[in-house]
Length: 308
Image (cartoon, rainbow, N blue to C red; front, side):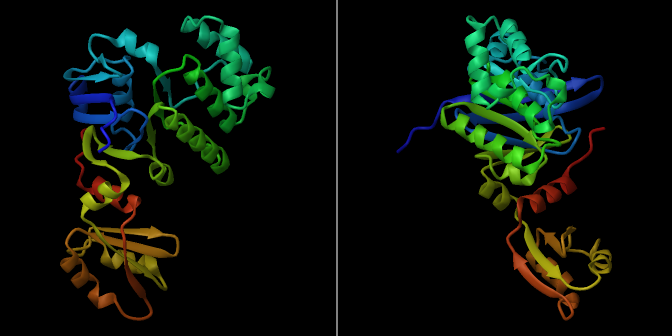
């Protein structure tokens, strides 16, 4: 029997408040070494605040835990030396070259032989031929590569990535994820926030947070199974009218357009089928389907309570 991998992140009951508002509430999470862990949720759900506590930029108001074995409350300085944190916004100097930006980051970390470290990071992310290019003229995908190179220059054991592929084209996103899986295969742990369901499906494990509360976690299959959803797909004419007629009908919890079809979901399969029965006739074509990750997350959002 294979023994479990060591935990890179191990936190219990972590809570953070700003003024009278609880932004992160009682989150417990375990992330194994070498795992790519997807941290999902709507805007304003507390994802970024949670990441900032993990990397030592914020101190929890309650709860306890470790990041790479270092205590969140008392060893923030040590955590910062071993974690790479990529923020939502591009945060490097646009009037400096790629090489100069990386050299600046290497200085911050006090890396010996900075030239070798910069060359290594440039080569690792395919940036060598662009080393003299100004960061400000890069496209979104190349800025993303530079940001990742900067996160990796001090050879961290954990990457915290906050929506790193927002606004990046599909090809660059795919290349980015191929690099993440290569790094994970070498033992690097990744905690990544994303709104893209296809990216979430590339993660080894997932957690979903809404309004500061952790609603579910596990592998992709476990998260979908735990939701307990039954989903039907329907195609046919004037689906907008059908959606309007079925929204709010007892048993139908969610009606969502997917291209030329609708997905209709509920947690009680008997009530759902009874609600749909009057409409299951031509010109509509119905079939039961396995709920997808997006179906599950839309359902979870419907159960969450706003903490604004």
